[in-house]
Image (cartoon, rainbow, N blue to C red):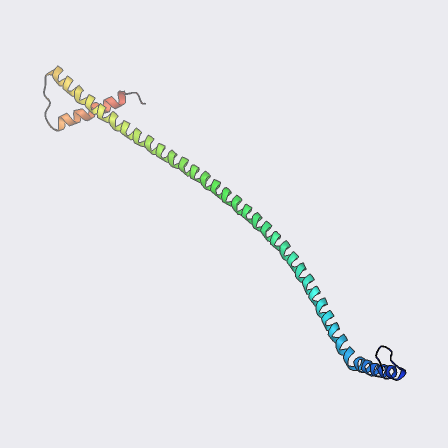
Length: 168
């Protein structure tokens, strides 16, 4: 008996044994193997589906990121514009305030100048009156009494000088 040239009995028993092994594999082995292959296939399909979803989410996140960057740029632009407008408003207000303060100071200076001028005019009138009294005294060669008479004369001369002077 040789394996290269098997006889009929050997072939028969080989076919029977092959049939039994095939039956056992078909009954118990193939379902387990097909179940494992199916599970693996399902796992791969789920993984691909999850990868697609992750890629879609990533694309969505990239779009969201781009949108947020654009919104941030717009917000930055708006804030800078508001800050510029606010700065210009503040500068304009400061100029107005400075102009108003300058006008006040100018008006105050004019009032002070007018008061100083009036005071100077009074002093000049009083000096003119004193000189007039001295000239009159020298002309008349009469000394006026110290006291009320001289003061009354001075007041009268100042009043006359004020009336005679042309208003400025």
